[in-house]
Length: 368
Image (cartoon, rainbow, N blue to C red; front, side, top):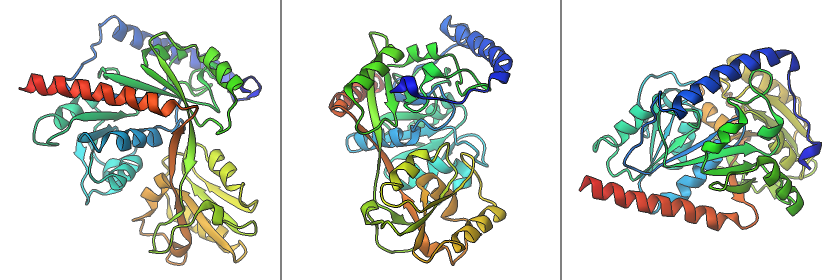
């Protein structure tokens, strides 16, 4: 139960967290009173974001929306492009390097070549570019990735993600905790999703989460869990592998640069207890020393072995010039997606599709 969950709070940093809270509260007040202005756009805009720094599953949920909408609508995704080397607005194509747009946008651009994938720190400017009629022709819906605090844009539908493992009602402000803003900011969301839930979460725990989150009457609350796909070779044309094909005597080196690999480790432990990890910070750029460490650690494992990494890390590794040829045949990527619990998928899908259909019609009428 969530009441037994422990999360790390740096109590010595609470004075700094108090000051940060004051600053964020003043900023939100200025937007709430329309002193700072939020801008609406005549096109369906869906925002996916969180209140907690890192690790709530924004990318898998954004990809869920892409899959849901792309058959009926021309989708554009707009991200900040965290840690990219470029500036301003960039619209990705097949030749765009990961360094120009960031790891997660690169991942989505290559998984979904039939969408527009763009990055711009100024989301208003990015939307202007995507809707100017020639940069991204035919765009019918824009998904804003990680833009809950970017209040200069008023999205038509806002989705807030809350990590089951670190619920916002147990957390506190940065830098003592991981909250970007006070938890009352959740009232701006149209939809709240508790992500990374156990697949077999009980009805009692769901009700406890519902009570603690206490959604407003206008808000819909859903619960999702992570689902892992087949292992895919990153550098070779070898066969995909079902996770179930992993054998109990097989040794795995898990290489990650994400917010938390705990969920992946727990899933892999269902098949083998021989798991060694080499972990880095979220969005980590692999250096020569990092890759040497990976190779050394892998060499020390017994013969029956492989390397598993995430899709986000694969985006940084696929064209990395320092990945050793000896390692390449052993590196597999573990795809992740989300599944809705307790038959929430149908209602969520209907809610999103109806919003996009209705507002796409309105957009077309205004253009006419």
